[in-house]
Length: 228
Image (cartoon, rainbow, N blue to C red; front, side, top):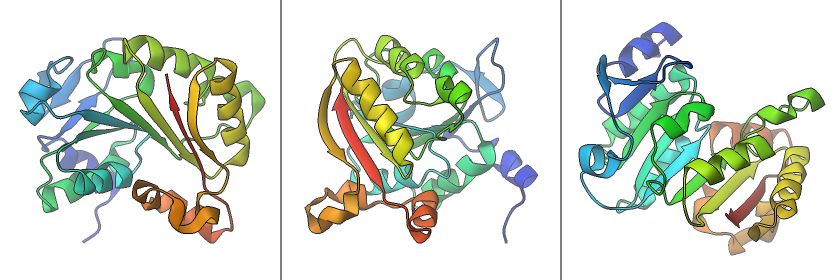
């Protein structure tokens, strides 16, 4: 039976691998309806291993988080999104498949540094983020200079790998301009990943709900991998 939004919110409150922050001014993670402190403790307190941690920002339904976890059991994955009803889908799948290398955080991305310590994550995915097409809203793009500077200052003291996947060509070209303009090393830049057929990496073939939707409307899928 399909759950409505309120039922999904209620369900994730009881999930031990879903952590929620309800305050912008006083950020605090809640899990199983109790406050928890996880910053710098994800390896020891949650995953209980020293495997690399990969973040998926704006994870939506968590399809990338879950699919990457399936493919790479020796890597830990944390999906982050502000909408709990979306997170529910991936979180429930992780339970159904007993995926121990998956967690989710419900929080605005701007608050994530309160819950992830520098060098705790070794790689970051940004999958189909909101393109914020209106010019005055460009500062809210997860690939804007504001967010790029936040990632660089809060998530790592050394260079790590980032991935962007989007169907929006304007956002993609904006992103490449931001990254190139700041002098970061771009490893891969593809304006249509499926145009090169079998040459793409297997992890790029993971398709989210939004990717399938946009492909059905005839949109190309764009991908960039960079280091900063």
